[in-house]
Image (cartoon, rainbow, N blue to C red; front, side):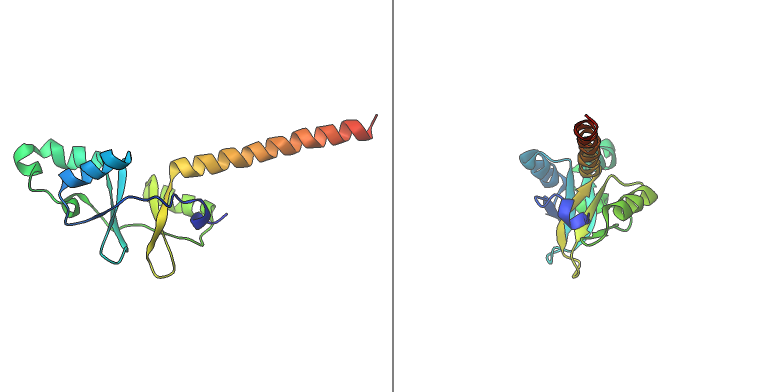
Length: 147
């Protein structure tokens, strides 16, 4: 299974020049805890989480919070997954970088969606269900053949 087949397409994005207050409004409006920071061309340049806003922004105090921009809270180089990468490879990449969410990009580097740990768990649960169904089916066939 490829990352592009599982990723959430309804990814909420924000420009790095926006205020963290506006970012928080977007999170509230769309009921998400993560925004992908993009430039005008929809190339991901970072991830902003609700935790980044609270720990990196609000904790500094109201006088500092009022002047902060999204780009002030995005740290480090962004890690992305290619839409054609196998999800198990993407999971290894996430583990290696200690991240729970990873933007998925196309061959041009444009944002396709976001793949999260929740997506991985849902996929794995569905796969385990298929294995369980296989075992049940195998038992039924065995019973009918051996009567």
